[in-house]
Amino acid sequence: MATSPIVFPYKPLAGLAAPLIPVGVCIGDVWRKVDFYVDSGAFYTILGRGFAAGVDFDVSTGQRVLVQVGDGSFIPVFLHKLPLQIGSCRIEATVGFSEQLRVPFHLLGRTDIFTRFKICFHEKQGTVTFEPVEQPAKPLA
Amino acid sequence: MKPDMIDPAELKGYDDWMVAHLDEAMQQHPGKIIAVYAGKIIAVGDSYKEVYATAKAQGIEDSPFVMEVPRPDEVQHMLPSAF
Image (tube, rainbow over all chains, first blue to last red; front, side, top):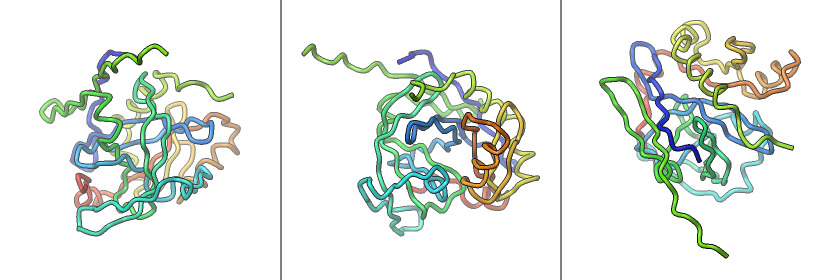
């Protein structure tokens, strides 16, 4: 995996600035390119409403979990392990799918992401930096 | 056979596109799904399926960058950090 930090500028959103980044997600042998909101408060990475249907992906084969959202309610999320690409780094990550996610962004959460990168939000500069973390070598067979 | 990964320069190009054009897209296509390819919006629709189909109909075999364009009022009230 590449080790150089990847710096993403915040994106302008109606007078605000948000840590939106482009990410590759490999689903059914096709690399899809989508935007994610980097959300350190989110446990799971979640692709939101309409996306699974758009790429003809049957989410129901994944593990179903309930995730509590900001208003206290629980939403069903189906978890899958998928290849993700951030910059030049490719990783395997748990990715959830939910039709009930009521924000207009896909969320890049902590599981399998924040263990692979040191992630720094620099609000004053308006950047979010992903620094790949070296993984321990696998023991020889 | 699927490629091992996306050309990182392509992802960088979509990052640059969002910096330069996301605000404009929010004014022109709020609430829509858009597809971006080669630096241009090539499809606007109400679903991911629709914009992927429109891109394919234009002869674009590669998967474009797709995103839901937030509505300005939505952004003010719905920024995440919800979990």
